[in-house]
Length: 239
Image (cartoon, rainbow, N blue to C red; front, side, top):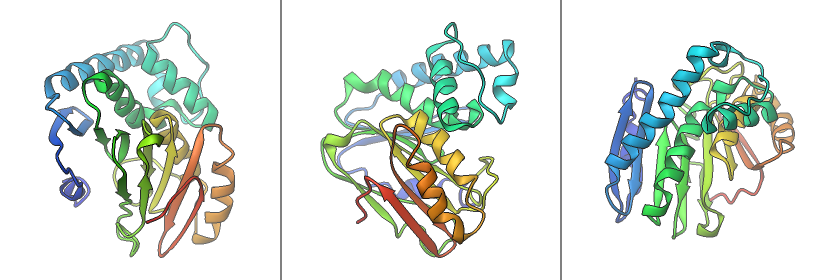
């Protein structure tokens, strides 16, 4: 499958950044930064995956629940964040896992590079000193890669996460080709993209889903692509 081979990564404009891949089991991070931080990124990923796996071992419902779970102040930081943000979006905590991994690894590398892009299965944490353009991959939709969003440096660090019912392994109860959410928190953006995507069954649901999603606290902007139709709301500058 095109998605599984992650061909879209070849289209990322790296400019003067160094790019490298870090992979452990399901976590497959494509990172671009001012210098090669592969060793530091790997240590960070190991740390946060261990936190998640150890917590799931003792709380198996964390990995299977499709509904929010109670907050746990004794849980590791990444688990606490997923519990809180998924609760805000009314989805199960694992709906936020890819965005959370991107964000937590991102902040571990934050002080070592002024420019940083971490992509984990379509969920991005980024920090940039220059204006960026992010193209949205929407599978077989005619709008795939044609819808582009401008990101200003002063808006970063930022999370840009995409959920799809037609691309990749993510669980979705909707039919959208892409639901892209912009938030200061990549963990929240990931959870919100899942929650919003669940509400898009046909093109007619785009407006309803946009109006629902923008009310989620912490969501800055949303783009939805379903078939040949799209809609956007909030702080979204389309290019």
